[in-house]
Length: 231
Image (cartoon, rainbow, N blue to C red; front, side, top):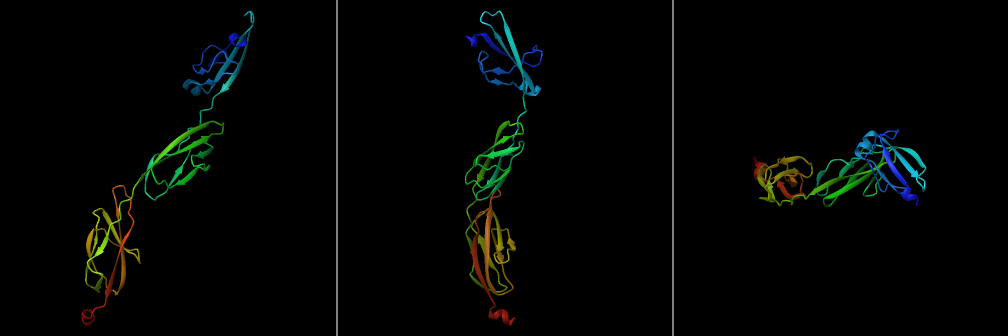
């Protein structure tokens, strides 16, 4: 029986003196699998020796192969991150020659817009054909509810103040929709215009995660009133 007369050995030197400490799947198999140890990988090579004895054990035949161990890719999918609902993020892989992401994309970087918190895996292959995997977790923070925007009056005279009010106590950002000019960061404030016309004001809120809500709008018309014209 050939399997009972053969045995595999792993050495750290070509002279077969210092045993390596990796493991064979079966030292008596004709074609075993060898798993290098951490020390083997650090050394970069091991020598695998097959010793075969004749049936009578009178003759011992040996053969040795040198196994070079590549260090592996050390592929990196990047650091875990958080985004706001509706936002996108670019993931950048490094450490390998080619990449395959869990969404089947094969570029170094990918743009993702997860709806819920999601893990993205990347498989990297280096120049030696060694394969490694890494995972990055992207958490999705929900955006805050949009505030309700209100004005104390829908029509007012030029130069007379109206009060614009947001229903939210979060950080408010008011702006002129036509010009995009910022007006105030207060929840409630007095505001007036110097030129007659219809004005549309927008307000959105920002929460502790720096996520912005949808925008709420309120329209106000400022007229040239008779008292203004006389003055």
